[in-house]
Image (cartoon, rainbow, N blue to C red; front, side, top):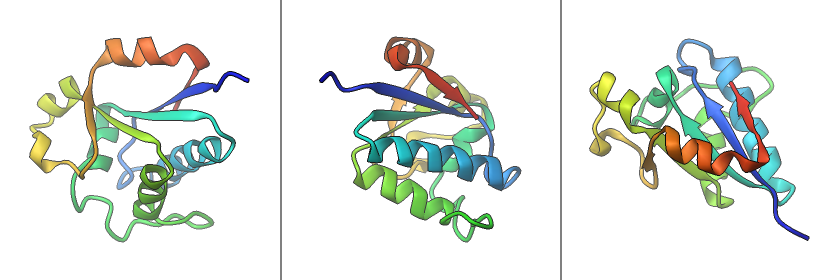
Length: 120
């Protein structure tokens, strides 16, 4: 059986919309648990999710903390992609990001979206 691919496009800063960001990360983790290959593409203000220390202490009701969701996603083989144009617009450098982030752009998202995109 061929493995399915999925891309989650996360566009919200968890400090501004914690519940929506937590939901997106939870969906990505749930897909990984069903053997779907998942990439989260962080764009717009969602890019702040990947900045070191930005998500410390953020936890929505009925969800694991944002940091726990990110850690679990990475541990289970998910890929975290930061959109380089949005990094530049927000003065975020590669050194500002948590370890393991892949710097990408829209062509990567389009190429990898064969299994569909969930936008949050």
